[in-house]
Length: 248
Figure (cartoon, one colour):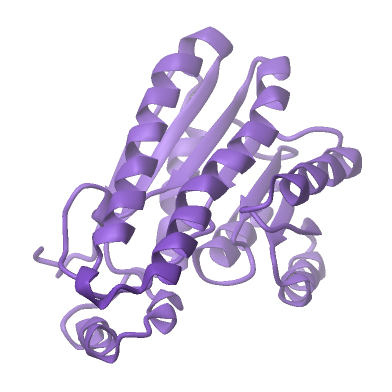
């Protein structure tokens, strides 16, 4: 896909991987739809993109709410006329043992990491089908193919994203000329660890920073660019990207 002039919707764009991807794609000439719950943070990123000559438009979206998602997608299409690329990036990663019964955290992970992907995909996919073209990128994780203590629900949600991505590729790739890619990063320098309320697991996760050089949001963005810019007859269905010194 030639990226210049295309339109991308990025969820979870207010920080971390989403912010990095937005700025990288904007530098490629992509018109960016920035979506998240924090409109103030989005507006700041929007301004930073525009200051260096890029195009961006902020839409306040709660991915767990169908009405909010549909309204945000409608606003982006009204602004730029279409959507070519969807990047389902919004996600959270609280960690705790199952017998700690942090049920509210379980619910929130399922709502954002699974239901959010479904809501946004359902809102954008008809536009891609009508165009008979497009690319959907879903953020899974190393936890979408491996299992880790303390991350039972998170692993389950990311296994879902990986499975959903590949089945979607099977069902809509040839039929509608839409490519689907699942990105599965290892350790990335983001704010996900800040969401961990269990102090033991939070300390354990933070200690990983002393053991390896984490990936950056730009590393993930560059892997997406590789998939997006691949020839039209190529679907990079999965990218498993790790720090060089991550042994597990």
